[in-house]
Length: 491
Image 1 (cartoon, helix red, strand yellow):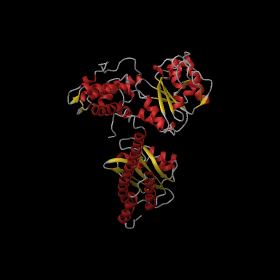
Image 2 (image 1 turned 60 degrees about the vertical axis):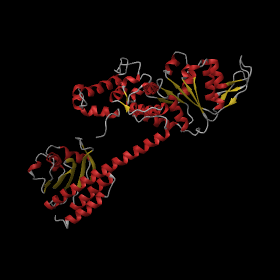
Image 3 (image 1 turned 90 degrees about the vertical axis):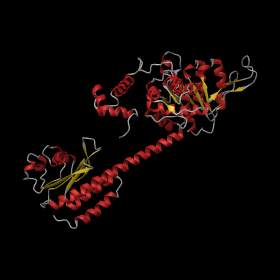
Image 4 (image 1 turned 90 degrees about the horizontal axis):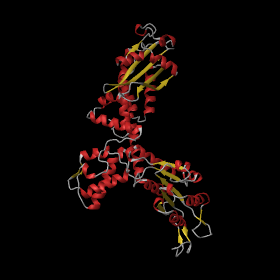
């Protein structure tokens, strides 16, 4: 076969494929162009998903079944295998008689007459290969065809890499837009870690509904901020958001605060008083530490949820209210139900949507982000000036277990700003009760596992290969863990 004006044709094709940005369309265009120019009958393109990967995937094919492709690519004496091993183009004008393919069953079984295959190489890195053959036609591929395909493959490799980079940029831009959108929606909640993003996503999904929400999490994790975020992103955001800490009030006082009372209902009730549910009509009531509510008040709460009705203490009249209830607890409410301290029917009414707020030790990526945020806040509030935290202080913040969570971190930073007189804040300025930041006993295996990995990497001065050897795991597994925790860049 003799190509007419091959370089002119190559320039035309090169301009066309380099103008294609969508990877899937580009691969199809490359395949169809190669088949058309070389008058091939069948073909496929195989690529690594990433330069460092070892496995190849078929990304596009023409006139070949998956079984046929597997037969062509997998045999050790196959055309594709040899091209990938040598990284050199290969042509066979009579594949049936070619000694290089003796033992290659696919050549015989599929009655392949002529074969051409070339590697896809970008900046000396093997990306994959383009394979084509002829069965029905008795015309042979020629050296001109091979020269064309080599040049075409070089251009195709550049186009594929550019398209992949474009796809990556598109995904990155999408992720950044989503992140900025989240930051706008949840401006009071500081965090970029995977666990807190999961909370953002759940909040965004449930905010517009009327369902009750139960927030579960340790003290100091920011449950009220999450409750406010739900309210602020709902269609009730123009009405009141009223929080009440149930654990600080006696049962009688809590009942009066929530439902109001009638004048003379009890000693000291000198006038009528509306309760928080009436004040929040059309809005949201946040019941913090719901597990501390007594059984009598629990019964009344159940009526609010089921019937949308309240009755003031000492009154006989029922009043209609439209409120959304968000509750929170740092206890295991199911256990409270099992032990008879909490009504089961109320639990299920409150727990329509359950959101677990992660403790700070599971949000390590957010620790320094939060610390810097609190530092700026308290510097401004106290009219002081600091360059920031010392390297040892940052290390300490990351290693400390934070049993008091975000609230403890905030208090530690405020205390450091007030008491420290150095240009940079050192670790001793935090004055935390647990002065040993090492992992204490009584933690989950997941937490202990993370601690062991981090300490081993520190011990090897950041040598991840050596750390993987010590931990008896693969480096890829270690990289994956660090990426999951947000402790590794993408390079």
